Length: 491
RNA sequence: GCCCCCAUCGUCUAGUGGACUAGGACGCGGCCCUUUCAAGGCCACGACCGGGGUUCGAAUCCCCGUGGGGGCACCA
Image 1 (cartoon, rainbow, N blue to C red):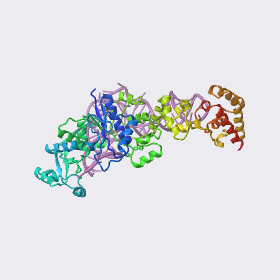
Image 2: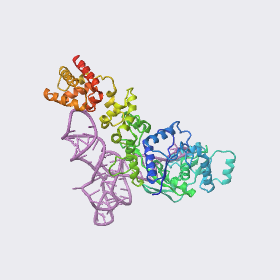
Image 3: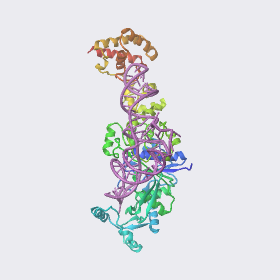
Image 4: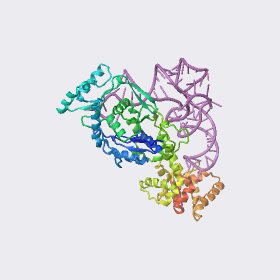
């Protein structure tokens, strides 16, 4: 297998989202699968849109997901720099090469003129396109205007005749009539390149073998292959991924959908996922399967994905986000974690709630709550009472089904008697006498254990009762039951 | 408007001309287990967008519709 060099090349303009993360994931998997390298490159050539902190968020997001890159802006590498604003000379040089070889030309048209041309074209119901004014300028005239200090851009000279055939690995040949194509700006008046030039130059310079990117680039794909060919470079394998659709499947993700997701304790942004209780293993597994056709055994670690990954089995069709499926993969991977690992990840959720966590207790409750967690923060609902001094059960919760407060108080009292007669409350010793009591009293287990559950844990839903009491400890249990009796008798 | 891409259960997908009575997963429904909630086990429901071709044979190939998505910037 030929080692692939792949790259994730986001622009630092906003939050790292699921779509970007999945693109990074596939690029990562391909590199690891083939024993190649995965690179992070920051495409920050639009100074106006670059957002402070965005680059760091991308880096943090990739780290959190475990998509470690071999070369990048913060770690360097032999093809650096990896931030495009630090490579402007390289692009200027390549733009000049293109002008010299007749594949590009300086353009002096102002934004105002361009806007007007576009407006007129639309009024005439023509397709908006550059009208070619500067394409026919002579070398001398252009040189003269440049020397005079006129500001200019460089446009790529697209062929007017014939067709461009570009090959996408997932879709096959994409044929575009050249007359549909436009002379795009590749170097801006500020001297920085547009994506079209910068990405092509960097992918070549950085020896990228597979360009894995979103399908939003399909429209400018012919331009890109024309640029690469104008330089006489070997083309990389082009892999255009599909987009993510909103959960309804109708349309792409929008701000509105993002708000809905948050309301639902989910998010499109990687930075939010950790705080929401999602673990990278689950997120990665979930993302991987949207756009990658795996027949069966779809619960995988990243290493297993690397093992099974093939760029051929990626799918070109758009996929709707399904957060229920994320929940499933998250819960599944939580259950796969070792007790120690899970304990370490859970601890912050408890301490954040000002609960004092001792590691011994924490380790003991893991087996009790593990299979009940969909997200890590669910540990609060199932385990807070283990770390609390007292619980405050609601009076009405203490009344068992079909009984009244007085009867329930009797049951609590009797339970106290039985349990206080034991030297210690653990699962093995406490359950048999309590079961015997249920038998002889003619009550059902639901009623008796229900009262005990609410009394000792403070809640109607909890991990298994006797196992929980064992962790809570004899003294605390008895005290809590006594408290419950008091509450019931006050009713 | 023009150009490009996509199309299998509600969702993610398997399927590359005969092994398809179209497989798996999520979700949904039911049952079992059970002290609650889960987890687990079993079962059920559920799809080839439509129309034309090609072929002995089409989910699979071609064409046309339809639907969805993307693009048409000195943004990426």
